[in-house]
Image (cartoon, rainbow, N blue to C red):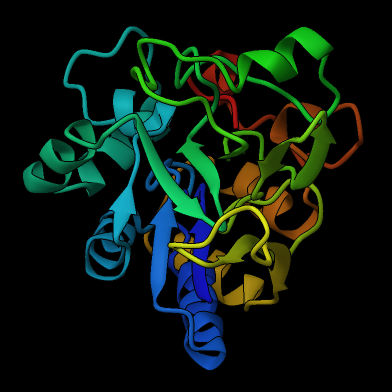
Amino acid sequence: MQRVAVISDLHGNATAFEAVLADLRRRGVSTIVNLGDVAGKGPRGSECVRLSRLHCAVTVRGNWDDFLPSETPERRDDAGWWWHSELSPEDRVWLRSLPLSHDITLSGRRIRLFHASARSVYHRVHAQHTDEEFAGMFAATELTGDGPLPDVVCYGDIHDAFISTHRSRTLVNVGSVGNPLDEPQASYVILEGEPDGDRSAPFGIQFVRVAYDIDAEIALATALGMPALEAYAIELRTAIYRGHHEAAGLLGQDDGQASVRSRLLDP
């Protein structure tokens, strides 16, 4: 039996990433696939790039990995430029070079791994999805390339872990390590199966939650002078998306980050 950890959406939160790596070492899981959004929103994108390159067998490109390295984005506020500048030139080149999709096979099941959807790194499919959206996640597209269609799809992007099975196809959202928006603990998934086995071989999908020192992460972001700090701190502590903070009465004051409501700075 082989075990593969699938992580996603580190978002510059190296504190959470290090806690997940420690948990994986305790479990004896050494193969890690990263579904992207390595940097942005948190203070240590460059460190998350370094750790991803060191520990992850594969990292696929997310929407933040696609737009954050660009020197001429369509829209970017002061926080966006801060996260961009925190990355080294080498980090930016690496992020933009990442593949869009990756397939593995366990226990006779083709498992497809990408960031957001089979259509685009910017096309979002939520936990509450239509039958058409579900089917689209398993389609062959320009992003996924030709080849056999998958039996299992794992993705990230929405920061909301779930599993849905329909007619022998399973859709898995692995949640977020660095910016979870379902509960305030890092989330990832372990896939387990036989690499050379057929569908009669055992196959498992395990969701894992890892607590980490949220206060230490917020203190570090504060010390580094990261913009958009209030929204980040509230998200980490409450797992409530920043676009809902004002309506929920969570904001102490307007943080001035209007573009966090735009498509590019969505979770």
